[in-house]
Length: 143
Image (cartoon, rainbow, N blue to C red; front, side, top):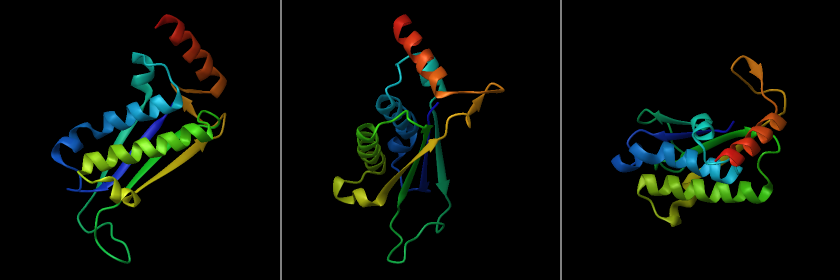
């Protein structure tokens, strides 16, 4: 199941952006992963917002806010084309939530972590990618 985490300095997101960015990023991730749009899969797409205290993030150049989006997916779940789309859309989503324009895109970095098969567990059991694919096919048929 996919997980997405945005790390941002406190106060760097607009009030409206802060309220909606987690659900928006989860939807972006599900879309690019190709998961069915069902309550079950939406409920498994965890989205975290980690806000760093003032002064906790700087660069060697300045103190302008930077944003880190970390995505964890099962290995093989996202093709190179889908990764590119995910990175692009996640970047736009974060920029929008921060009230920044496209010219600030280098402030957003997206890391895609692929979890090897057999190293992901839920509900007390190991979850394999093939199991998720079969579940998604069943969910699509029922949707």
